[in-house]
Length: 351
Ligand SMILES: Nc1ncnc2c1ncn2[C@@H]1O[C@H](COP(=O)(O)OP(=O)(O)OP(=O)(O)O)[C@@H](O)[C@H]1O
Ligand SMILES: [Mg+2]
Image 1 (cartoon, rainbow, N blue to C red):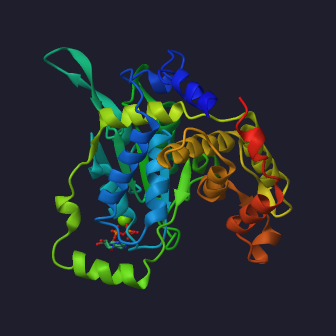
Image 2 (cartoon, rainbow, N blue to C red):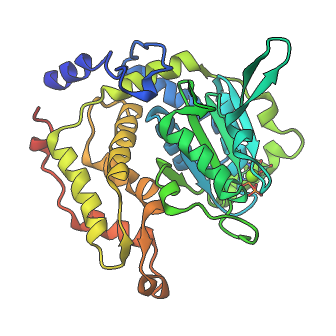
Image 3 (cartoon, rainbow, N blue to C red):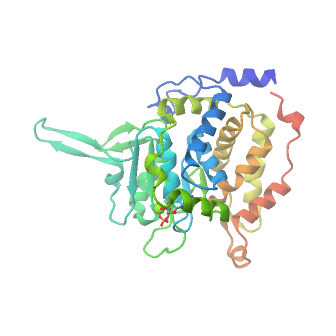
Protein backbone atom coordinates (compact mmCIF):
# COMPACT_ATOMS: atom_id res chain seq x y z
CA UNK A 1 0.00 0.00 0.00
CA UNK A 2 2.87 2.35 0.82
CA UNK A 3 4.13 1.95 -2.70
CA UNK A 4 0.75 2.96 -3.98
CA UNK A 5 0.78 6.06 -1.80
CA UNK A 6 4.14 7.18 -3.09
CA UNK A 7 3.09 6.54 -6.68
CA UNK A 8 0.12 8.82 -6.18
CA UNK A 9 2.14 11.46 -4.41
CA UNK A 10 4.80 11.72 -7.08
CA UNK A 11 2.17 12.39 -9.70
CA UNK A 12 0.50 15.13 -7.72
CA UNK A 13 1.74 18.04 -9.77
CA UNK A 14 2.05 16.20 -13.04
CA UNK A 15 0.05 16.79 -16.15
CA UNK A 16 0.65 20.42 -17.06
CA UNK A 17 3.39 19.96 -19.62
CA UNK A 18 3.63 22.60 -22.32
CA UNK A 19 3.25 20.02 -25.07
CA UNK A 20 -0.18 19.05 -23.79
CA UNK A 21 -2.75 21.31 -25.47
CA UNK A 22 -5.20 20.51 -22.70
CA UNK A 23 -2.83 22.05 -20.21
CA UNK A 24 -2.28 25.34 -22.00
CA UNK A 25 -5.19 27.13 -20.45
CA UNK A 26 -4.87 25.36 -17.14
CA UNK A 27 -3.88 27.32 -14.07
CA UNK A 28 -1.40 24.89 -12.49
CA UNK A 29 -3.55 23.16 -9.91
CA UNK A 30 -2.31 21.52 -6.78
CA UNK A 31 -3.97 18.17 -6.48
CA UNK A 32 -6.67 17.35 -3.97
CA UNK A 33 -6.26 14.19 -1.92
CA UNK A 34 -8.18 11.09 -2.94
CA UNK A 35 -10.41 11.49 0.12
CA UNK A 36 -11.24 15.01 -1.06
CA UNK A 37 -12.13 13.72 -4.54
CA UNK A 38 -14.43 11.15 -3.05
CA UNK A 39 -16.19 13.62 -0.73
CA UNK A 40 -16.52 16.28 -3.46
CA UNK A 41 -17.94 13.60 -5.78
CA UNK A 42 -20.53 12.63 -3.15
CA UNK A 43 -21.43 16.28 -2.65
CA UNK A 44 -21.96 16.93 -6.38
CA UNK A 45 -23.88 13.67 -6.77
CA UNK A 46 -26.20 14.42 -3.85
CA UNK A 47 -26.84 17.86 -5.29
CA UNK A 48 -27.78 16.51 -8.74
CA UNK A 49 -30.02 13.90 -7.13
CA UNK A 50 -32.09 16.68 -5.61
CA UNK A 51 -33.27 17.28 -9.17
CA UNK A 52 -32.96 13.90 -10.90
CA UNK A 53 -34.83 11.09 -9.17
CA UNK A 54 -33.52 7.53 -9.02
CA UNK A 55 -30.63 7.79 -11.48
CA UNK A 56 -27.57 7.01 -9.41
CA UNK A 57 -25.49 5.24 -12.00
CA UNK A 58 -25.69 7.74 -14.92
CA UNK A 59 -25.05 10.57 -12.46
CA UNK A 60 -21.85 8.93 -11.16
CA UNK A 61 -20.64 8.18 -14.69
CA UNK A 62 -21.24 11.86 -15.56
CA UNK A 63 -19.12 13.02 -12.62
CA UNK A 64 -16.38 10.51 -13.46
CA UNK A 65 -16.27 11.83 -17.04
CA UNK A 66 -15.93 15.40 -15.75
CA UNK A 67 -12.99 14.39 -13.57
CA UNK A 68 -11.47 12.33 -16.39
CA UNK A 69 -11.45 15.50 -18.55
CA UNK A 70 -13.81 13.89 -21.01
CA UNK A 71 -17.09 14.66 -22.72
CA UNK A 72 -20.43 13.01 -22.21
CA UNK A 73 -23.11 11.96 -24.68
CA UNK A 74 -26.56 11.53 -23.16
CA UNK A 75 -28.72 9.51 -25.53
CA UNK A 76 -32.27 8.54 -24.78
CA UNK A 77 -35.90 8.90 -25.72
CA UNK A 78 -37.69 12.23 -25.07
CA UNK A 79 -38.70 13.31 -21.60
CA UNK A 80 -36.46 11.15 -19.42
CA UNK A 81 -34.45 14.02 -17.97
CA UNK A 82 -31.45 14.33 -20.34
CA UNK A 83 -31.48 18.11 -20.48
CA UNK A 84 -32.36 18.29 -16.82
CA UNK A 85 -29.37 16.17 -15.86
CA UNK A 86 -26.98 18.18 -18.05
CA UNK A 87 -28.25 21.42 -16.53
CA UNK A 88 -28.10 20.05 -12.98
CA UNK A 89 -24.46 18.97 -13.39
CA UNK A 90 -23.58 22.34 -14.89
CA UNK A 91 -25.34 24.24 -12.10
CA UNK A 92 -23.72 22.18 -9.36
CA UNK A 93 -20.36 23.65 -10.28
CA UNK A 94 -19.86 27.37 -10.02
CA UNK A 95 -18.18 27.94 -13.37
CA UNK A 96 -18.99 29.34 -16.79
CA UNK A 97 -21.78 27.41 -18.49
CA UNK A 98 -23.17 27.92 -21.98
CA UNK A 99 -26.04 26.14 -23.56
CA UNK A 100 -26.48 25.61 -27.29
CA UNK A 101 -29.67 24.34 -28.83
CA UNK A 102 -28.58 22.60 -32.01
CA UNK A 103 -30.65 23.28 -35.11
CA UNK A 104 -29.97 22.61 -38.79
CA UNK A 105 -29.23 26.29 -39.48
CA UNK A 106 -26.60 26.65 -36.74
CA UNK A 107 -23.24 27.60 -38.27
CA UNK A 108 -19.79 26.46 -37.10
CA UNK A 109 -19.02 30.08 -36.16
CA UNK A 110 -22.08 30.07 -33.88
CA UNK A 111 -20.12 27.55 -31.81
CA UNK A 112 -16.54 28.73 -32.09
CA UNK A 113 -16.96 32.50 -32.39
CA UNK A 114 -16.10 34.97 -35.14
CA UNK A 115 -13.71 37.79 -35.89
CA UNK A 116 -15.63 41.01 -36.49
CA UNK A 117 -14.28 44.29 -37.77
CA UNK A 118 -14.14 47.02 -35.15
CA UNK A 119 -14.24 50.29 -37.11
CA UNK A 120 -13.02 52.39 -34.16
CA UNK A 121 -9.98 50.23 -33.54
CA UNK A 122 -9.63 49.57 -37.28
CA UNK A 123 -8.90 45.98 -36.50
CA UNK A 124 -10.57 42.61 -36.25
CA UNK A 125 -11.82 41.64 -32.85
CA UNK A 126 -12.59 38.05 -31.80
CA UNK A 127 -16.04 37.43 -30.35
CA UNK A 128 -15.78 34.08 -28.55
CA UNK A 129 -18.59 31.59 -29.15
CA UNK A 130 -20.34 29.40 -26.56
CA UNK A 131 -17.55 26.83 -26.65
CA UNK A 132 -15.49 29.21 -24.49
CA UNK A 133 -17.03 27.98 -21.26
CA UNK A 134 -16.18 25.37 -18.64
CA UNK A 135 -19.32 23.38 -19.31
CA UNK A 136 -21.07 23.43 -22.66
CA UNK A 137 -24.51 21.86 -22.79
CA UNK A 138 -25.28 20.96 -26.41
CA UNK A 139 -28.88 19.99 -26.71
CA UNK A 140 -29.97 17.69 -29.55
CA UNK A 141 -26.58 17.57 -31.20
CA UNK A 142 -27.91 15.36 -34.02
CA UNK A 143 -30.08 18.24 -35.27
CA UNK A 144 -27.04 20.31 -36.30
CA UNK A 145 -25.48 19.99 -39.75
CA UNK A 146 -22.41 17.75 -40.02
CA UNK A 147 -20.24 20.85 -40.52
CA UNK A 148 -21.35 22.37 -37.22
CA UNK A 149 -21.06 19.06 -35.39
CA UNK A 150 -17.54 18.73 -36.75
CA UNK A 151 -16.63 22.23 -35.47
CA UNK A 152 -17.73 21.32 -31.95
CA UNK A 153 -16.08 17.93 -32.00
CA UNK A 154 -12.80 19.44 -33.14
CA UNK A 155 -12.82 21.83 -30.18
CA UNK A 156 -13.59 18.89 -27.88
CA UNK A 157 -10.62 16.91 -29.06
CA UNK A 158 -8.09 19.71 -29.35
CA UNK A 159 -9.31 21.91 -26.50
CA UNK A 160 -8.57 24.89 -28.64
CA UNK A 161 -10.21 26.92 -31.37
CA UNK A 162 -8.55 28.34 -34.47
CA UNK A 163 -10.36 31.23 -36.13
CA UNK A 164 -8.76 33.17 -39.00
CA UNK A 165 -5.41 31.58 -38.28
CA UNK A 166 -5.34 32.53 -34.60
CA UNK A 167 -5.52 29.76 -31.99
CA UNK A 168 -7.34 30.31 -28.73
CA UNK A 169 -7.04 27.83 -25.85
CA UNK A 170 -10.20 26.71 -24.08
CA UNK A 171 -10.73 26.88 -20.36
CA UNK A 172 -10.20 24.09 -17.87
CA UNK A 173 -12.26 22.24 -16.83
CA UNK A 174 -13.84 21.91 -20.26
CA UNK A 175 -16.65 19.45 -20.69
CA UNK A 176 -19.25 19.08 -23.40
CA UNK A 177 -22.50 17.45 -22.35
CA UNK A 178 -24.40 16.66 -25.53
CA UNK A 179 -27.88 15.21 -25.62
CA UNK A 180 -29.53 13.38 -28.46
CA UNK A 181 -32.64 11.46 -29.12
CA UNK A 182 -32.33 8.07 -30.88
CA UNK A 183 -35.95 8.00 -32.05
CA UNK A 184 -37.61 10.51 -34.33
CA UNK A 185 -34.50 10.65 -36.52
CA UNK A 186 -36.17 12.39 -39.45
CA UNK A 187 -34.34 15.57 -40.39
CA UNK A 188 -31.40 14.73 -38.14
CA UNK A 189 -27.74 14.07 -38.86
CA UNK A 190 -26.62 11.05 -36.81
CA UNK A 191 -23.11 11.55 -35.47
CA UNK A 192 -20.58 9.66 -37.62
CA UNK A 193 -18.59 6.96 -35.83
CA UNK A 194 -15.41 9.03 -35.79
CA UNK A 195 -17.27 11.73 -33.91
CA UNK A 196 -18.98 9.43 -31.46
CA UNK A 197 -15.51 8.19 -30.62
CA UNK A 198 -14.70 11.64 -29.21
CA UNK A 199 -17.18 11.22 -26.40
CA UNK A 200 -15.61 9.52 -23.42
CA UNK A 201 -18.87 7.90 -22.42
CA UNK A 202 -22.44 7.61 -23.48
CA UNK A 203 -25.16 7.23 -20.91
CA UNK A 204 -28.86 6.74 -21.23
CA UNK A 205 -31.13 7.91 -18.47
CA UNK A 206 -33.77 5.18 -18.73
CA UNK A 207 -37.22 5.43 -17.22
CA UNK A 208 -37.29 6.10 -13.49
CA UNK A 209 -38.62 3.23 -11.37
CA UNK A 210 -42.07 3.54 -9.83
CA UNK A 211 -40.94 5.03 -6.51
CA UNK A 212 -38.67 7.55 -8.24
CA UNK A 213 -41.42 8.59 -10.63
CA UNK A 214 -43.84 9.11 -7.74
CA UNK A 215 -41.17 11.13 -5.90
CA UNK A 216 -40.73 13.21 -9.06
CA UNK A 217 -44.47 13.97 -9.09
CA UNK A 218 -44.38 15.18 -5.48
CA UNK A 219 -41.19 17.21 -5.73
CA UNK A 220 -41.41 18.61 -9.22
CA UNK A 221 -45.12 19.23 -9.73
CA UNK A 222 -45.33 22.81 -8.48
CA UNK A 223 -41.82 24.26 -8.57
CA UNK A 224 -38.87 23.16 -10.63
CA UNK A 225 -36.16 22.30 -8.06
CA UNK A 226 -33.53 23.13 -10.69
CA UNK A 227 -34.33 26.83 -10.27
CA UNK A 228 -33.08 26.82 -6.70
CA UNK A 229 -30.27 24.30 -7.12
CA UNK A 230 -27.12 25.73 -5.49
CA UNK A 231 -23.56 25.30 -6.74
CA UNK A 232 -21.62 22.95 -4.46
CA UNK A 233 -18.23 23.17 -6.14
CA UNK A 234 -16.33 25.52 -8.41
CA UNK A 235 -13.87 25.47 -11.30
CA UNK A 236 -10.85 25.84 -9.01
CA UNK A 237 -11.87 22.85 -6.92
CA UNK A 238 -12.65 20.77 -10.01
CA UNK A 239 -9.14 21.48 -11.33
CA UNK A 240 -7.63 20.14 -8.10
CA UNK A 241 -9.86 17.05 -8.34
CA UNK A 242 -8.77 16.49 -11.95
CA UNK A 243 -5.13 16.78 -10.91
CA UNK A 244 -5.72 14.15 -8.21
CA UNK A 245 -7.37 11.80 -10.72
CA UNK A 246 -4.37 12.12 -13.04
CA UNK A 247 -2.23 10.78 -10.22
CA UNK A 248 -4.30 7.64 -9.58
CA UNK A 249 -2.06 4.59 -9.91
CA UNK A 250 -2.52 2.11 -12.75
CA UNK A 251 -0.44 -1.09 -12.64
CA UNK A 252 1.00 -2.72 -15.75
CA UNK A 253 -1.42 -5.62 -15.41
CA UNK A 254 -4.40 -3.24 -15.38
CA UNK A 255 -3.10 -1.56 -18.53
CA UNK A 256 -2.73 -4.99 -20.14
CA UNK A 257 -6.28 -5.85 -19.03
CA UNK A 258 -7.65 -2.68 -20.65
CA UNK A 259 -5.89 -3.56 -23.92
CA UNK A 260 -7.15 -7.17 -23.73
CA UNK A 261 -10.72 -5.90 -23.32
CA UNK A 262 -10.35 -3.56 -26.32
CA UNK A 263 -8.77 -6.29 -28.44
CA UNK A 264 -11.54 -8.71 -27.58
CA UNK A 265 -14.10 -6.23 -28.98
CA UNK A 266 -12.06 -6.01 -32.21
CA UNK A 267 -12.00 -9.80 -32.55
CA UNK A 268 -15.64 -10.44 -31.65
CA UNK A 269 -17.54 -12.11 -34.49
CA UNK A 270 -20.55 -9.77 -34.29
CA UNK A 271 -18.42 -6.63 -34.41
CA UNK A 272 -17.56 -4.73 -37.58
CA UNK A 273 -15.68 -1.92 -35.81
CA UNK A 274 -14.22 -2.50 -32.36
CA UNK A 275 -12.90 -0.15 -29.70
CA UNK A 276 -10.18 2.25 -30.87
CA UNK A 277 -6.96 2.93 -28.96
CA UNK A 278 -8.57 6.28 -28.07
CA UNK A 279 -11.36 4.27 -26.47
CA UNK A 280 -8.86 2.21 -24.45
CA UNK A 281 -7.22 5.40 -23.23
CA UNK A 282 -10.52 6.90 -22.24
CA UNK A 283 -11.59 3.71 -20.48
CA UNK A 284 -8.48 3.95 -18.33
CA UNK A 285 -8.95 7.66 -17.62
CA UNK A 286 -12.56 7.12 -16.63
CA UNK A 287 -11.50 4.17 -14.45
CA UNK A 288 -9.00 6.40 -12.64
CA UNK A 289 -11.74 8.91 -11.91
CA UNK A 290 -14.06 6.10 -10.82
CA UNK A 291 -11.40 4.74 -8.46
CA UNK A 292 -10.78 8.19 -6.95
CA UNK A 293 -14.52 8.75 -6.49
CA UNK A 294 -14.63 5.46 -4.62
CA UNK A 295 -11.79 6.74 -2.38
CA UNK A 296 -9.18 4.42 -3.92
CA UNK A 297 -5.73 5.50 -5.09
CA UNK A 298 -5.36 2.74 -7.66
CA UNK A 299 -7.48 1.17 -10.40
CA UNK A 300 -8.84 -2.36 -10.00
CA UNK A 301 -10.36 -4.62 -12.70
CA UNK A 302 -13.87 -3.88 -11.38
CA UNK A 303 -13.49 -0.24 -12.40
CA UNK A 304 -12.87 -1.25 -16.01
CA UNK A 305 -15.67 -3.80 -15.96
CA UNK A 306 -18.17 -1.25 -14.65
CA UNK A 307 -17.20 1.37 -17.18
CA UNK A 308 -16.74 -0.76 -20.29
CA UNK A 309 -20.39 -0.39 -21.37
CA UNK A 310 -20.68 3.42 -21.04
CA UNK A 311 -17.21 3.94 -22.56
CA UNK A 312 -17.21 1.33 -25.36
CA UNK A 313 -20.81 0.61 -26.38
CA UNK A 314 -21.39 3.75 -28.45
CA UNK A 315 -18.21 3.15 -30.46
CA UNK A 316 -18.88 -0.44 -31.56
CA UNK A 317 -20.41 -1.14 -34.93
CA UNK A 318 -22.11 -4.49 -35.18
CA UNK A 319 -22.39 -6.60 -38.31
CA UNK A 320 -25.67 -6.77 -40.22
CA UNK A 321 -26.11 -10.39 -39.03
CA UNK A 322 -25.78 -9.33 -35.40
CA UNK A 323 -28.41 -6.63 -35.93
CA UNK A 324 -30.77 -9.14 -37.50
CA UNK A 325 -30.18 -11.51 -34.59
CA UNK A 326 -31.16 -8.69 -32.25
CA UNK A 327 -27.74 -8.48 -30.57
CA UNK A 328 -26.64 -5.21 -29.00
CA UNK A 329 -23.24 -3.73 -28.21
CA UNK A 330 -24.12 -4.27 -24.56
CA UNK A 331 -24.47 -8.04 -25.18
CA UNK A 332 -21.09 -8.16 -26.89
CA UNK A 333 -19.42 -6.26 -24.04
CA UNK A 334 -20.97 -8.49 -21.38
CA UNK A 335 -19.48 -11.51 -23.14
CA UNK A 336 -16.11 -9.79 -23.53
CA UNK A 337 -16.00 -9.14 -19.78
CA UNK A 338 -16.85 -12.79 -19.08
CA UNK A 339 -14.21 -14.13 -21.46
CA UNK A 340 -11.17 -11.92 -20.89
CA UNK A 341 -9.11 -13.26 -17.98
CA UNK A 342 -8.99 -10.92 -14.99
CA UNK A 343 -5.49 -10.04 -13.77
CA UNK A 344 -4.56 -11.64 -10.45
CA UNK A 345 -4.89 -9.33 -7.42
CA UNK A 346 -1.23 -9.86 -6.44
CA UNK A 347 0.00 -8.76 -9.84
CA UNK A 348 -2.29 -5.75 -9.67
CA UNK A 349 -0.49 -4.13 -6.77
CA UNK A 350 3.10 -4.47 -8.01
CA UNK A 351 4.77 -1.29 -9.16
N1 LIG B 1 -35.58 10.81 -13.41
C1 LIG B 1 -36.19 12.00 -13.37
N2 LIG B 1 -36.16 12.74 -12.22
C2 LIG B 1 -36.73 13.93 -12.16
N3 LIG B 1 -37.39 14.52 -13.17
C3 LIG B 1 -37.47 13.86 -14.31
C4 LIG B 1 -36.86 12.56 -14.49
N4 LIG B 1 -37.10 12.16 -15.75
C5 LIG B 1 -37.80 13.14 -16.34
N5 LIG B 1 -38.03 14.17 -15.48
C6 LIG B 1 -38.80 15.39 -15.76
O1 LIG B 1 -39.30 15.30 -17.09
C7 LIG B 1 -39.22 16.57 -17.73
C8 LIG B 1 -38.51 16.43 -19.05
O2 LIG B 1 -37.12 16.32 -18.84
P1 LIG B 1 -36.05 16.82 -19.91
O3 LIG B 1 -36.48 18.06 -20.57
O4 LIG B 1 -34.73 16.83 -19.23
O5 LIG B 1 -36.14 15.62 -20.94
P2 LIG B 1 -35.23 15.28 -22.18
O6 LIG B 1 -34.80 13.87 -21.98
O7 LIG B 1 -34.20 16.31 -22.38
O8 LIG B 1 -36.29 15.32 -23.37
P3 LIG B 1 -36.11 15.76 -24.93
O9 LIG B 1 -35.43 14.61 -25.63
O10 LIG B 1 -37.50 15.94 -25.39
O11 LIG B 1 -35.31 17.01 -24.94
C9 LIG B 1 -38.54 17.52 -16.78
O12 LIG B 1 -39.48 18.37 -16.21
C10 LIG B 1 -37.92 16.62 -15.72
O13 LIG B 1 -38.00 17.22 -14.46
MG1 LIG C 1 -33.84 17.77 -23.89
